[in-house]
Length: 486
Image (cartoon, rainbow, N blue to C red; front, top):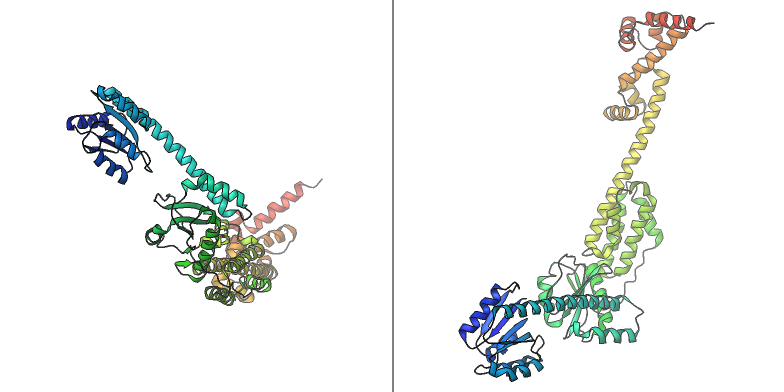
């Protein structure tokens, strides 16, 4: 319970009821006290009171008159009557005027507590039902807004059923990409979240400026003309949506609806396809000029907002189709870029798209460079295989394939898993083993054939790798062969 009003001319009784209410199990945000019906009426007119406990006999304005006068107010409180035994007939009359409970003086703590608990339960139930109905009413409003084939009879039915939950004054519809987890709890403002990716505010005309300057001051919004009937809601929405798209295109924070000609410039599918191809080359600057020109024309009104959206979606789709192997880890970015109007304006979208395209371009060029480097390393390996017996070093090989010395060193190790020196050594020693096993050539000659002019150096390397000298290796190989003879 938010507010409890106690109306009693006797101060001690008034304070006693307030004390009982404070100590009751019912949570009460505020207890207001006054001494007569005249004061109470002014309070009820200006403040939403949930429950009023009132005496019957009071100066200036008695309880009966008070209950009669508040009966038709927009937020009449639940009334509990307290009286003496002699006023019982008046209490019965008050019950006919809507009083919920009757308490006889002297007031008993248990009875007041019981009544408050009962009324609190009713308030909670009513609040829950009201929220449910309001929720349904908002979904009906969204249905009216989005259903382009809605019939007049459907509109009339919704208006009849939910008009009491709608605004009572002339209103405007405001469309924007406002996103907030918090619901707007403001008199004269209805908020419909996620209407085709936008937020729709239905706002009393008198509340428009305050909403724009406080809640929506950092957003790009479109505003409809002023309307007076719930039946005009879809028209107002379409006006606001058109204005929002104009705000998006021009970069103006606020765009009022106006009927104007749509942009005439056309961007062909061929031009879009050319951009997609340029995005994968070193001509990215040229590609970005194409995007910049589209942005400029959109801001100037030459390309209408929906055409801008279509062009951007075709660009995103084209890049995804053409470079599908490179965009697998970009799903979230792609979803965002497809929802063009989720961005504040066309400039913000342009920046997001160009940043994404640059990322794709960098990936493409890196992949291409990697491919070229792999081809060069493969060429180097063939050259090494054919020339390992000569005086080969990394400078000779990197010059042969026209690759920077440091880059060659890095790429060679990436591709083969070992550095250049070890790779050459493995090839030479493998050939040495074959010659030792299959021929009777002198070790000096073998050393020379595989690229080592210094026999001692060759022997030292061979023993370090195999654990035995070349001559011992040959002897073991020959013994092994003899054992396998029949």
